[in-house]
Length: 74
Ligand SMILES: [Zn+2]
Ligand SMILES: [Zn+2]
Image (cartoon, helix red, strand yellow):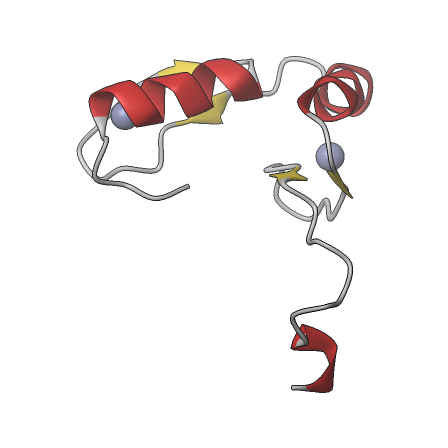
């Protein structure tokens, strides 16, 4: 696909996980602010099958994933 060229803009790292929201950004702080403002009370869930970890912080979820599920690539 022409829009997937390697020299294209680096794809944003952080994506809002709220269903129906397509907000993306490059840094976690911005995403965290977005989430608190737009989706107060939203809980993140670990996406690994069988894991019931939840939190409201993207960085915490990422740390959880890399610690608990080191085989999962984010
Ligand atoms: Zn959002
Ligand atoms: Zn987990």
